[in-house]
Image (cartoon, rainbow, N blue to C red):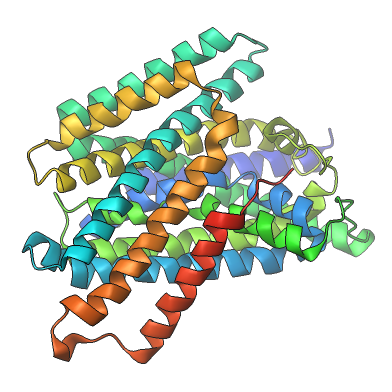
Length: 412
């Protein structure tokens, strides 16, 4: 290794440590808005930050940056629906002022989301355990399930005894580590990509498919950027205005990170077998960028799955409390989600049912969009009708989400 490469690796490591220290110590980032932003942010970037670039490249090749722009924009539009419901529909839910059809749709959407959270928690932490044990060259399915169960119990214990604040402290720690690593990753990738594009031509060898198949695969990828809806179920601690702002901030921050990372990762993705890529290959492919990055990304991969599981456990607990009309405490909500997740870990191969979890999230968004539209025609005061732009947007989103539910397929 040359002196310059040693200096570059040292620079990336120091940059990561400095940013991590700033994030941990910043008073501004300990404010109410940032604390509320942590839950949706950790869920969004934990859902698929490291796999988004190779996944999109395996579907549309060099068109991956355009695809991620579309996915982020669509996710932001869906977030707009959830934010509309927080501000306008949620108060009428609390006051029992919704029509029967609206109440039924809200109930069905909550069932879909609880199921999605149960599977998501089990899936994220199973990935974490699998990745950790593979890194240690251990292949034991029962040990993997035991590690997963232990982590679920640890997170649930924090949530039950320390409440939402306890979970937020876990999220704060893991998300700050992620953001510090991502910052260093972007610096390294930017310099690497500039040198690469000046000397070589980008060429991605990906399986050629018809447009219909590509669109169905992209429909499934949409759900990788889910997680923003967790803001809705933080009402125990935060006002509606704070939750709306936290969701918007989380989507903007994560959207920028996704778009920039996909663009900068394409030269690295060129070295991966896009016919059958694995997370370990993505991390190993970082060695040409900087020797330190694979280790840093391994830490980020563990933290991303951990923080996403914490966020979804928190969202699931809050959701169960809200829909039991506060008869079920948030702590018992966490326990309920955890018990069901543990049963899934020991009974089912979660890799095979993650597509069902994606459809469950899509179903929740679809029903929430219908709820907003029905509210507009049946439940809101005459002077509070939504604008024509919102009506057209929400109707269009309902059609797109129906397509995702019916036609989405996993990338192969």
